[in-house]
Image (tube, rainbow over all chains, first blue to last red; front, side, top):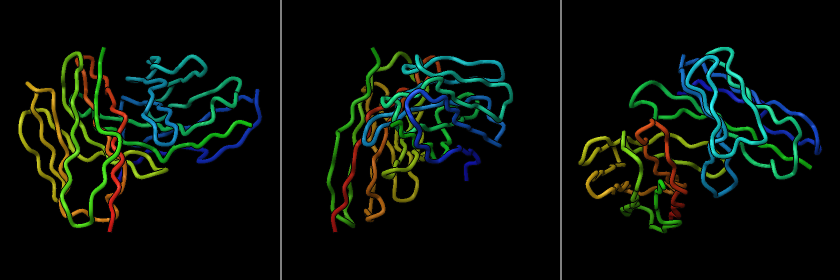
Length: 114
Length: 109
């Protein structure tokens, strides 16, 4: 069973608010990821990290930031939420080498921006 | 560019067998992965192929042909709980996962 946790599970906020989605894993994985996924649609990589103090942008990163100060923690911040940010946000982690492709996902954070 | 193709939707009958195909064109190859995703839930890992051939895991099997850029996921003895989306993903030369859009599998009684 995967040990990766996301909070909040559900969030409804107003436009312009700053929000942080939390993600923690207890597997000691160096690699962590944030994906955005709309219902029935494909996964879009927002940010990823290959270790402490390492963060990289994915395809969909322009309106969010991440930090990786500790191995187990990888929070995602939206500085000013907009209705277009309404989506499901999935955090994941993976092990080294070929295991990089075996992702363990959190349960997701479903965000609604009014 | 990098591309992964899968059928958008398939329908099968409970108890039957279904094969979900995936073709890929990526810069490099370090493995092909299949994930299952139930509606409203996160994906869960199903299988991994890095060498040509068939990998079997209970009712699920996955096949890979690297020369053809082709894989399939075979589900036997279908159960209603197998209704889900099945995602194909390839690990490229930079160890980045490239995702397909997924195949929605509908199981009918």
